[in-house]
Figure 1 (tube, rainbow, N blue to C red):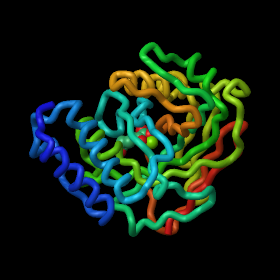
Figure 2 (cartoon, rainbow, N blue to C red; figure 1 turned 30 degrees about the horizontal axis):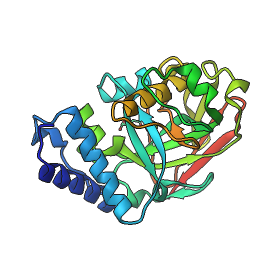
Figure 3 (cartoon, rainbow, N blue to C red; figure 1 turned 90 degrees about the horizontal axis):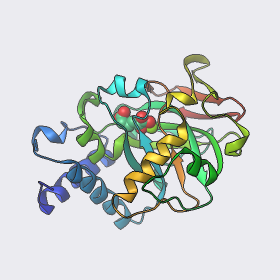
Figure 4 (cartoon, helix red, strand yellow; figure 1 turned 180 degrees about the vertical axis):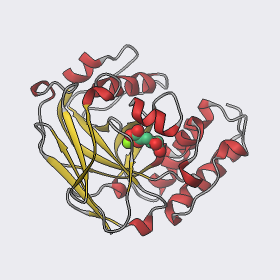
Amino acid sequence: MSLDTTTIERLAQLLDGCQRDARDTLKITDDNPDMDWHDAYAIQDAGRQLKLDRGLKVVGLKAGLTSYAKMKQMGVDSPVFGYLMDDTAVADGGTCKVSELIHPKVEPEIAFVTHSELRGPGCHVGAVLAATDFVLPGIEVIDSRYRDFKFDLKSVIADNTSAARFVVGGACVAADAADLRTTGIVLEKNGEIVAVGAGAAVLGHPAAAIAMLVNKLAERGEALPAGTLVMTGGITEAVAVAAGDHITLRVQGMGSVSIRFA
Ligand code: OOG
Ligand code: MG
């Protein structure tokens, strides 16, 4: 750790305030160039504690920057992990108010729900699939709190990996009922196809994103609890949205999920 606890708390407050007021800030590494990886996750943790203190609940976890398309779009080279809070869940077909966000984008993802605890180190795709209850389509709405969506990895980790809203829906499918590498996805905006892809875009297999998350948690002595919802990361580049847009994600064999922006 290179930052003291006062600075970590101040940066968590800053990002939390930006999220609540829908205003942006410069990436925090500009003013804190010595910030290390532990600091980045410590700021993320402090931000989660602020939300828990307000009575919110953690309802899932997320991996991000897990596909080459996403890493290339954001100019970074490795995945990141964050959490999903209950006040950011949107019902399938529900509405998301853009006035509550800064510059939202949507990402087509495959979500997993586990039925058994997963514990690293050494977690792998096979262990994840064995512990998976079902998979289903998910759209993540990301909204970086950083100006013009410009950040580096440490800044985006501190900002809970741009998490803003998420929706899961469609059909729940057993993980062994589909080959998630070849599972195709189609993302539509206002009825027009804006992105297509396949599960393998995420680290070769979406379950690999969860294995990475579990091994990351193990570094802190933590496990992924049974019954956890995990978003495995955008399969394609994220797509900007504005009020009036309607987004549908179709996933092969899993139906579709949608969200409207107002
Ligand atoms: C970081 C979060 C990326 C994903 O699915 O790749 C993410 C960002 O691009 O703002 O959630
Ligand atoms: Mg995402």
